[in-house]
Image 1 (cartoon, rainbow, N blue to C red):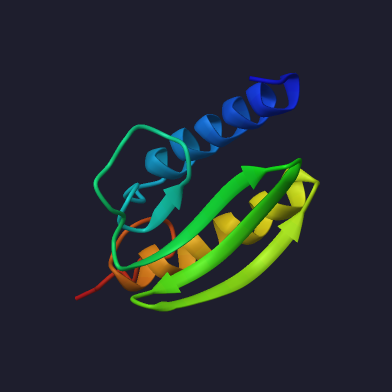
Image 2 (image 1 turned 90 degrees about the horizontal axis):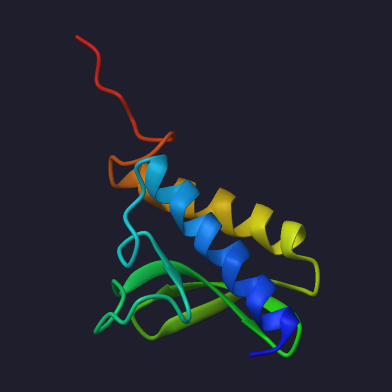
Length: 103
């Protein structure tokens, strides 16, 4: 593993920890390529990967996969990934954007 790959893995692991701490569900709301093995992520999710010094962020719903961002800068990709994952999870009643029912 190169230094770039080692650094990317550490950044992506910390990102997963941050999102789960906010109440999002890994493999359901978001998917990070290369983390602990999982059969399949949810059919609808926000994904991020790192390869060849580039971070890629996408939205996937069944067979529809739409790119959202591509950058060599982690912070740029992270911002898009977090915003989209929080939005998706919020619609599912999880995370900081979840709709709260008041009586």
